Structure formats: C-alpha cells, structure tokens
Image (cartoon, rainbow, N blue to C red; front, top):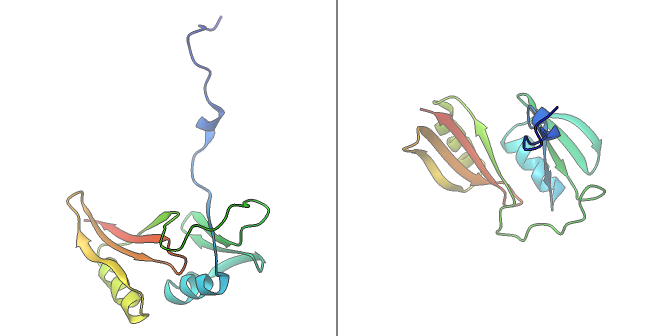
Length: 137
C-alpha cells in the first residue's frame, strides 16, 4: 500500500527536451529576412504564410503569426518577450559579431568574457527579442 504522504509522480517528469520554440511575430517578412538572411538559418518547413520552421540542432525554431494558438496582443515594441541563446564554438562568437555588424545589426553588448565562463554577444531581432550567441570558455 502506498504511503499517503508520498506525492504522486508528476506526468510532466516524462518531458525530456524542449522540442520546439515558437516566436510570435509582428512583421513576418522582416523576421524572415533576419533569420534567413542575417543568421542564415535555412527554412526546413513552411506550413503556411504564417508559420515557418528552422531546424537548429535537435530543436525546431518556428516563426508564427499569432492565430489559433495565441490570441495575445504582440509584446510592445522595446520589450523583449523572450531570450534565445545560441551556443557556438569559442572562436565563432567574434565572427558572429562581425557578421551582424556587416549586416547593420546593432550589438547590445560586444563579445564579452563573463566571470561565469561564457563569452557572450547580445543583439535583438526585428521584433525586439533578445538574442545571445555564446561559447563556453
């Protein structure tokens, strides 16, 4: 007989990974130009004009217009609704910064060695979401 004080295991303990991340976009064309033209993520699947997917390692990043799944108003301009961190090799942080500057993207913080053992680079996508490129050092 089970102890009544032992909590029942949560069904959420079966989650093993974040499968995909969806960014709800204000301006799909601008976001696609950024993710495909600047970051050079090749699109892997386009379900509609309002949903495009990119495969990044074992995860899927989707750009979507709010519709069936979210009726929320877009995050106000100047407010980040999320932060995405992309892990790269140590030498690539500076190369990514140079590529962003070449495309006219403002860096919020240039490549910086952090005391917690990461070299980081921060910038925003066209919708104002905070993006980070980092490497373990």
